[in-house]
Length: 464
Image 1: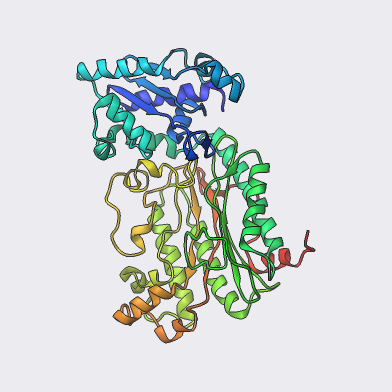
Image 2: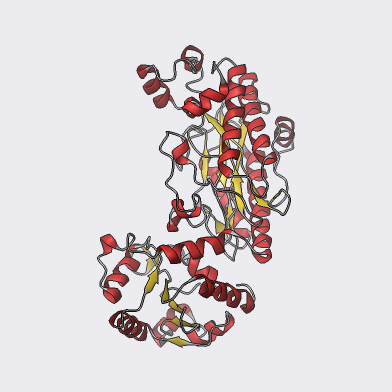
């Protein structure tokens, strides 16, 4: 955790942002895999971590915006708990570590909430994404679990989003560390890739590096020869000559800050001519997007710039035709790039996604409905302290090719005869993480090889 003053200041700013009432924070519980005592690795709720920093399960907290008080609720370990888990600090002792001097039991929390509800006081809560927290809201506030997310406080959500969106210096340092570890993960994969090795072998080594870095992976590893499937978590294939291998993996630090990097690597020592051509289109798009990052620039414009760069590059290769500007306006480029160019990142790899993309990425405005554009998670002006990924790609998805060709969709922009020859090509994505600075943007962490020459140079190094 950070110094107590960091959390004290965060809660002070939260109180300033709320008009009145109680802000209820629900920490996470342990989640059993297949029976009660065999649990997944515990991960605390990110907003609870942001304001209170404590990783122990079964905690809750209230910030009283009217009285200016903060209370952490939880139950101390019993002797039975200590036998299995060892001695632990008391709830009061933990609370002092983050600058909170008021604690009480969970039974007391139920009484406090009941009294506040009876008095007609506003009780703010964030959308629950775990069933056990929806059930707590039913028990404590008599809220139907099916309606719990809809009843979350928009005022609370907006206040949290605007605070968490701008990263402080202590957070940037953690994000740099996460990116450093992640670069090591990707370099190791580049050196391992060769015909005959399994996707699972590379994924296992990549996760080992994340664990050895003092944290874990930030999300399930994508390690695949089928890069055309955007979130492909299957690791059952063996690499063969002629394939490309796509790795999308990032580390989460011990303080739970995430990185998110992607690399596309030829299985052979060098890219084929066809792989090289598409890779250069993706790289040009990436560089254009990075060059546009600065305060005041809407991330939507960064995305559209990346899309136009892809459309122009694919037109040069004969895969698209017509006016690239018009093709992007109509959405024809989404045949190859059906997702967004990036998303916010911090304590969550898709930062604050549990609070709702319309608030995190759109400042409360509705999202787009056009295919491809509707998957853009961030479409608001950048501010210093924002952290975003940059990850354009080109993907050849056979099912999408067949569907659009049968419909003769965007026939004035798409050269289906040429596209057909690429149906088994796969996909290419390269990804870096950037923090917006006062006058531009800075890459987080150390440099990851990106150009064709750089990737091929790593591939030529002696294998470990």
